[in-house]
Image (tube, rainbow, N blue to C red; front, side, top):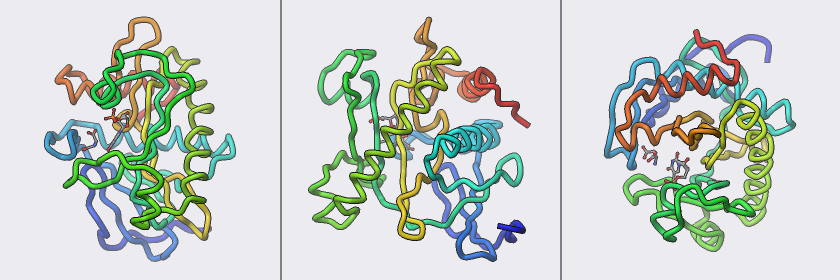
Length: 241
Ligand code: TMP
Ligand code: ASP
């Protein structure tokens, strides 16, 4: 792309990001807001600097993934809180990989928090707040037309590739990538990684102390939410502006 296409009307406002059309039908602009939500939108707060931290965190991670050969929708940051991305047809499924047990897995299966999961698990959730993002399977996805078997196989393969890349990056910076959620879309017939990768959609623990450095701080009322995201970023070498 030569020039940055001009920002046009808002297309959609999610819980934490707003999406704008651009002059070029193939590109959108994401604006990361300070809104922070959990429990399918039941707990919402504005956290100062969260938008800019997540925008720049996401840019760093998406760039590392692209360097590792994983195609993402990320093109470039446009400002502290905005990024230019490819305009994809989003698949309404969330792909979750878990390296250690936490969150809903512990609640559902009675597994102890922190237990190593070998091999890591792969789960699908339907992106639907009204239904509480229920866990679904591949059969549901085909029957209800959310994604084909081929698309799910590709999403699964890419989600595990992301695990190999990111586990190493976080490990080298003294953290454990406990679990994370990815969303994919279709761009010119290819399955491409979309949405964002930030501490809002993953669990990161300090390797030594097991301190939680992700959105569980918000969910569990532990405080220092954005400060912890910044600690993670600084350990990775991100200089936030
Ligand atoms: P869970 O333990 O609540 O199922 O979440 C697993 C991981 O996926 C955790 O890092 C949070 C992330 N996640 C989201 O960010 N949004 C979602 O809607 C879901 C289902 C999971
Ligand atoms: N389901 C996600 C969470 O609980 C996001 C949200 O519902 O707001 O973190």
